[in-house]
Length: 147
Image (tube, rainbow, N blue to C red; front, side, top):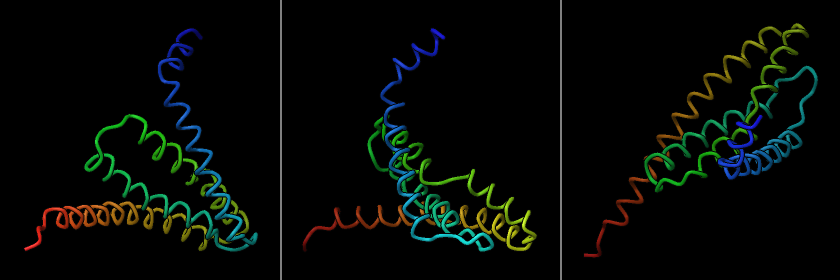
């Protein structure tokens, strides 16, 4: 117990930014779910959307954090673990896939599981590529001098 307290004291700022980011990300996910309500028998578009857009945003963020911005120890915990961790949801994804299977919608369930995985991987790659292009263009604009 004493070891847990010393870790919390030493890393309390990280815990705080993860919690704050998680609250913001969860609110964003709730807003998407409210905007795209799901019927009991339909495809879970809200969860699919938050997970795929979260993957895209994570790709953008990782380029910024690892290649562009100077190191700052609270950025990744706040944005990556907190905001995007609260925004995306593996638990809802798994539960919705199970519910689809249990209701006999096997094709939809398999499409949801496989489609989410494929779309998520493509979204991360797309986010990385898009941010790298944006960074190169930004650097090009800064290095161009009026002639």
